[in-house]
Length: 151
Ligand SMILES: Cc1cc2nc3c(=O)[nH]c(=O)nc-3n(C[C@H](O)[C@H](O)[C@H](O)COP(=O)(O)OP(=O)(O)OC[C@H]3O[C@@H](n4cnc5c(N)ncnc54)[C@H](O)[C@@H]3O)c2cc1C
Image (cartoon, rainbow, N blue to C red):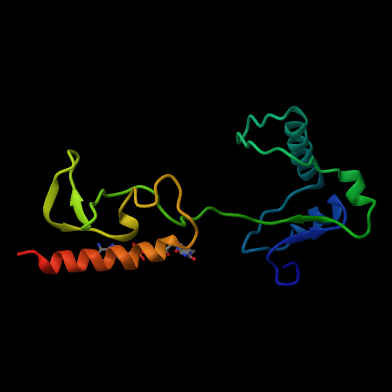
């Protein structure tokens, strides 16, 4: 990942700060050693207090021991640039088992079918990884057959 330019690496925070002067993962952000230290120390305080007022992260395990990392030649710091993207939507149009679209009152809207990611409720509160593809093939076929069978 380091060699391919996807992440920044440093055996010390100073080295890591130096590495961020290059592009990684398409990001050109540059951080100083002080900024990196501050963000780690802030995170460590959240772990110690078991309270993250910034992001409301609930699993706060493993404070980062800067000194221990800098003194161990076998380990170092890795910084991975991130950006948000949409993977799957959990909400959308309500359909019945024939893939007919329902209105707010639960009545069928004649002549309208839907399947796949525009529909909501199929996967309940959370989608199991991989099930979107099963969803589109199963309900896509049902919607097609249902539409073809209509007058
Ligand atoms: C990076 C990524 C990885 C994923 N990996 C998996 C996985 O491993 N397993 C899994 O099950 N699911 C995975 N998913 C989710 C899954 O791919 C989607 O839920 C699924 O492809 C949705 O299919 P769909 O046919 O409902 O919608 P889409 O595939 O979004 O199809 C909608 C189509 O409608 C077209 N369209 C939009 N507006 C109009 C318009 N006005 N007129 C005409 N056409 C229009 C769009 O161009 C598009 O082709 C992944 C999603 C992403 C983003």
